[in-house]
Length: 573
Image 1 (tube, rainbow, N blue to C red):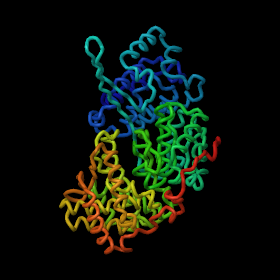
Image 2: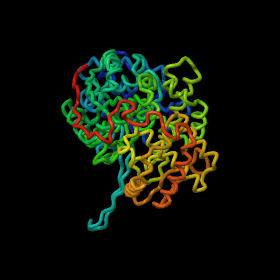
Image 3: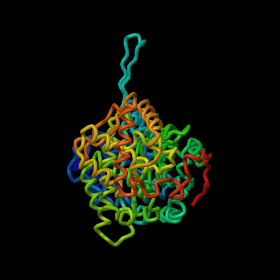
């Protein structure tokens, strides 16, 4: 399908349709039927879709084409709304008509019926039944989709008597990511375009975010006439256990979340991980939208397909691979974050800069500590700093997604975004450190190991350590003296990574990655001693500013047991 083909189809519908705008007129229009078939036949989940169609089709349009592959199964109001969005991208002259048709469908008692049911009601029943029977065999995803965000295929072979069967299965998952400002402003339609056709939104809200933004969230959905149900949860690091996930699922059952209805998750890394896991488990796959309000959730935990919670004293022991269908990173939320929370989140950006994007690394060096104290340019009138803050977020997100989504189910362990995360999971909880400070220690130690391997120069090693120090993150913590603990963490990581250490480290130069697969206990002890001596030459002798959870108002995960977190509130706004 080409962009020109789509425009002609839309224009044909507009030119030939009578303007007696009622559902029967639309549904029985021959051009509308042609449009449905064109949308269905689009190779929507092709990796080359964006390249195959003409250059003036936006990325947003290709995302809508993937969603519209299930047009037959969509309620009329939802379909017309999606076609209005598509028209906005590729045929603006059609947009107002689709908007009018969506409004008409919203006011009709039949507007919530699927297109196939409307075809049976208003069209030729014999032809429609034949179409349904054909699609049941030819393209069941188009007619009876469980989700419009995911499709799967499989090839099954067997020997003649069926005693041996082999199957190869593939799954395609669709997601989109927006680095944007002002998500809750009333003229921003990213959320309303998604939830208005559904008629309601179930929102899992971090209680810390609720204190600052609950009224704005309510006002946004009220303005767009969308019913809102809030599930407010405390989401501290100590709450990140299976009890919280179970409580979330109980609330999903209470409010009747459906498999086609994306849950909106609003908050930081803990609510992203646990809320995403609850969605993965509920109905075996419930879609969700992540509205990130922190650095960690904004460029790491938020878009990550690795949903998880802690268990038995181990970080992220339980989990599932379940990417959000949309991630929204809005730095305007950073204005109300404590400086310590932003500081520890920057570690995840440094991670991607060191092993994936030298441009990002240089931009961090150039921007410096002002990035932290200006809350990514959100509390300053310095336009240059504002632009740098936005650019840093965009580059970090791009690097992360390039690393993560090419290996969605973690089928191999060459994962650049695990830099700093090889040894830190073993000492983060017992040390009581914030995640970002623990990762920073892991990155600093990893840079030193890379230098010892001869993979990076002294100059690049020192640039990496200096950048971590300049952002007041930790290069060192006394828990690193417990080499037996660190080595036990390494053993656990090797088990988790299929028998290999495969520790991502900078290799060659900053912005490139290699993997260390051997480190004996003796080598580790010697390397830690040498690294400790280097750390002492940096500001604060390598110690970070506010490195502990308790330093920034969070409970110490090393001393507080996981609570049986319950939903604070279940209410209709």
